[in-house]
Length: 65
Image 1: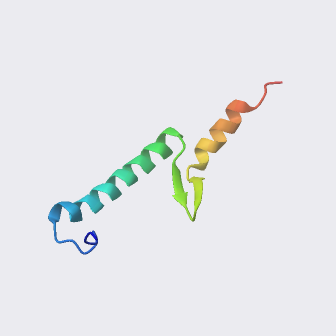
Image 2: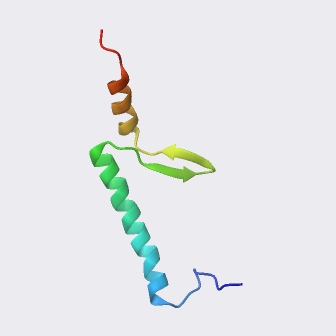
Image 3: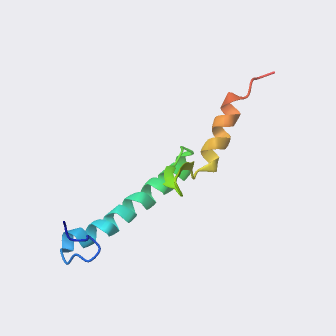
């Protein structure tokens, strides 16, 4: 069995958590700025955390009268 990552003393592994958090934050900010979906897996469900993307998609799909 392998060692748990959380208890690791390897600086590269410990730094990777910070890097992943930065990348996730950047992706979230970019999605909100551009109005694109930001999809995550939460509580066993797939969820779009960017309601602006949902609104813009609904506006594009409305038929013009």
